[in-house]
Every structure is written in structure tokens, then in C-alpha cells.
Length: 221
Image (cartoon, rainbow, N blue to C red; front, side):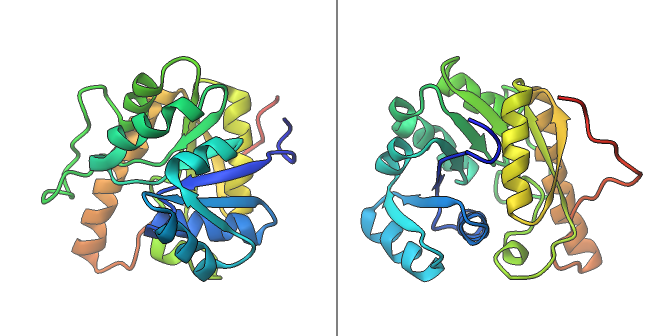
């Protein structure tokens, strides 16, 4: 499957703020998108609201119907959600966007014992699934709008070809995606989210983002 021939994308947790924003941008760019939710009714309602040909299914059915699955659920729901859809993920790329925020102290970095939410996801899903992580630091309330978002997206994964496909999806969302290296490096972006929340509050910023400076040369395949 090439970057341009990605197939159907399911956004699990697609009724939430980040999931709906990603789903809408991908569908607007011409991708075939399914939003998944715990109930078919909720997914169908969200799909109708988002438009752009998006359809809605219950999480398991959405995962089964997709070629690439993007998981956009809160950290507290990550484990249960992944276990629920795991039977439908073998051989697929799963894009995990989970940030390990632990209320009420969301401005403090609290990485899980595995080192990152992404590594935790890979452990739950096993070797038959290729986990890539991305979209940790972009403000969902900005992404849902039709405007430029001043934020780069760091993409992590042990499979470079899979990372490249996900960077293509980031580009479809009108954002710049950058290779961030191995999946374990996801800890850096996950931790940065708590820092950005702190900056938002301390400096009254409406959704601070992360941008990499300098002139970048695209890596060789």
C-alpha cells in the first residue's frame, strides 16, 4: 500500500474533540473515513454532523472495516479500547494519539510504567500490529476549524515505512509531519503535552503548539 493508496481510515473515539477534528480534515482531503464510537448511534450522529462523506460505526465494526486505525481516546480508556478492537487489527497500522494525562495534575508529566502510552499500546496489541504514534501536541479546537494551525506533528514508530504513511495523513490534515524516530521516543512528545498545558495556563495562550526550526531536508527512503 503506497502513501497515496491508504484505503479506509477508522478514527476510534472519533466523536471526541481530537478524533472528530482529524476525521474531518482527512475526509475533507478526500480520504475514506469512518468514525468509531462505543455506540453506533453516537458514531452515526457525529458522522452526519462532520459531513464530507464520513460514515459512523461502533468501534469494533469501524476497526474491522479499516485499513489504518487511528485511536483518539483518553489515557484512562486506552487499554480497554485497544483490547476491544484488537481482534480486528492484525496486519494493520494503528496510529495511537494517546497522551498519559492523569487528572487533576495534567500539567505534570506522568508517563506510565512502560515509558510511554505508545509503548503501552504496542504491548497490548502485540507484534502482529504496527503501532505508530502521532498528533500529541496539536490543539483539537484549532484543528477542527478551517484555518492554519501553527504546529508540527512528530511521528514515532519502529517501522519507517509505516511512519511515512502516517506522515502522509498528517499532511492531509494540513499539518507538517516529521519523523521522530523509534516508538520509544514517543515519550518526549507525550510529556510535552503537559508542558504545553502549563504554558497555555501560565501565559494565557489559546493552544500552544510545537514547531521545529531550521531548514529540513527530507530523509531518503
